[in-house]
Image 1: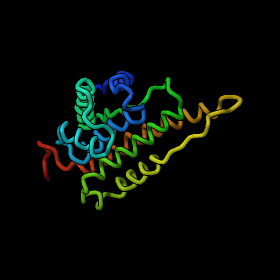
Image 2: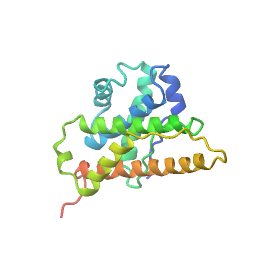
Image 3: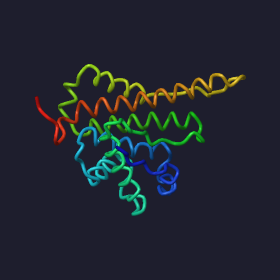
Image 4: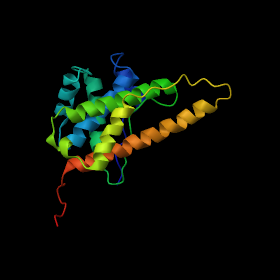
Length: 191
């Protein structure tokens, strides 16, 4: 099954017209993902309402609104992909590791805010694995990184590798939470 691709991140920054930086733009994606993990059948209006409630963005300009709706639709598609095709919408590798780490921490913060915004009682009865995933996302949300300076460049290379591993871990944690909270889908057999 082929999944929809997320919109181009740099194009999203340009469309935001200076109203959001890279971390703020990444936060839009995590809010979409958090809402859809909690409420898979949510519509784009619920997404825009949540963006406003969490004070990320109010009344985006029409072109930017279209891009965010495309982001929401692609996020739903990726979260529903049985091949685990979820990608995180983050600044590219041309940005500093510090900026990407800040965006990743903001991604986790926004995801947690979106998950928690529904006062969902299911969060109180998560399995051990899902509860651990949620706790790990809370830890990652507080991430910081050193200055990356090293005379031989070794530390920065290690930090880049660790960053890639953290992204993959977050992806899997989100998918674990999606499975835990989604409930049965149409067509699932009940034994």
